[in-house]
Length: 75
Image 1 (tube, rainbow, N blue to C red):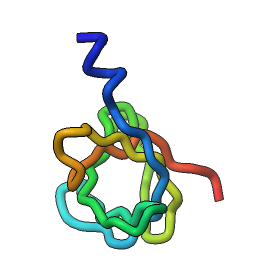
Image 2 (cartoon, one colour):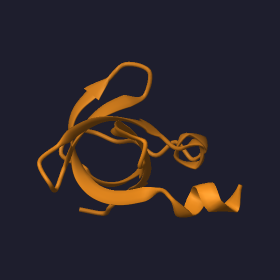
Image 3 (cartoon, rainbow, N blue to C red):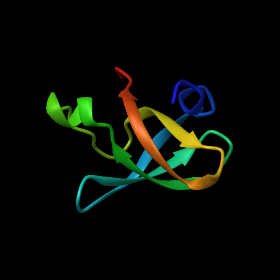
Image 4 (spheres, rainbow, N blue to C red):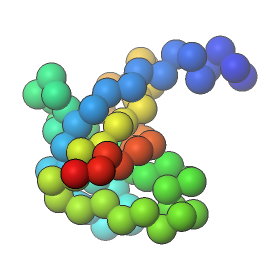
């Protein structure tokens, strides 16, 4: 299981749209737009994410259209 964590791709992006069920459209630095959800720790600690927030996203190399938001940067 440790191998799977090493394969994740981490990128930075900006939240472009807030959607229902804690889903977000994130515009990545390379110009792509992906669908992302919040990681469990961010949900647990009630970290709010709004349009324009800079975030770090983890993506699987197998599906580059979806990801998980792991960090919200301070603006």
